[in-house]
Amino acid sequence: MLSRHPIAPVHSVLLYPREDGRAMANLLRAVAYLLEQGVAVAVPEELTPVVEGATGRNPQRLAGVDLIIALGGDGTLLRASRWAATAGIPVLGINLGDLGFLTAYHGDQLMTGLAAAVAGELAWEPRLRMSIEVRRGGKVLVRETACNDAYVKHGDIPRLLSLATEVGGSHMATYKADGLIVSTPMGSTAYNLAAGGPIVAPGTQCLTITPICPHSLTHRPVVVGGESEIRITYAGPDDISAAFLTVDGQKSVELALGDLVVIAAADQPLKLCPPGISVFRVLATKLGWNRGNNGE
Image (cartoon, rainbow, N blue to C red; front, side, top):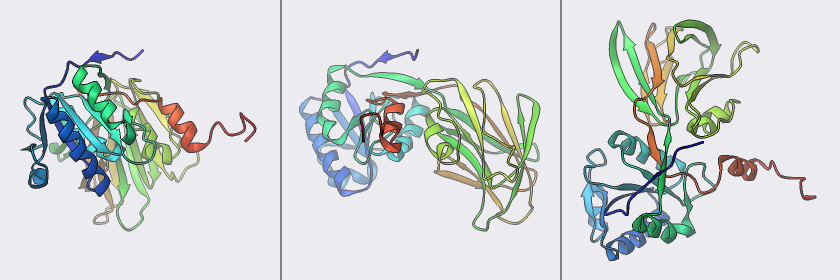
């Protein structure tokens, strides 16, 4: 069972909106309400000219912030989560699009979510993150963390990649595929799901390895323990810009032949205010799993 940790009534909040008109309108409503409740409100620095009463904050400098509220969809929450997780601050999602897997409240529940934050009625649950390193010639070239996934994939020109993969120090497979996805349980409903990987219940301590269009029909997704270290060596081809590592769909690095990608569970989890409905109910709605149960 997932552990839940109550959040005390908030005194300082960072609002992180998606860049569109609907998100900005809800941002202004949220700022007005929180200021009325005596809560200090911060927004990304570039928004301060259009948001009266809020202070500008660099999202990478969050000392004193009690809660980050993402206004948008799962992508917006994921971007906010990268900063929130590093700073150890809980993050709450207000969904302004379709049904989301990660957001706690829908857009028409904005004021309900804000009131819960002010009243100390929210709680966070831990979500496994991954630490990722790219090593070249024995030296660490890139170091990142991921809440959802990290994947190696071909560049603009399609290439069949060769990816030698170890788990826990043992060789597992050398994949011949368009790419390889390693995902957390939280990320299992993202690119992993689209590539045919398994849906993993939130809070499960495991990582999923899913090939993208594997050349061999015998290569299937594999779930490994969260304590396992995964090592992926880029073994070919040696074309320029043939392969890239992408982290959470936001950070990307070009790989060279022989580069080693090392993935393991991060020391600190993401503190996520859990979705208002289960991931399985969202899937049932999105994918129509319940059709036929009532005669439809």
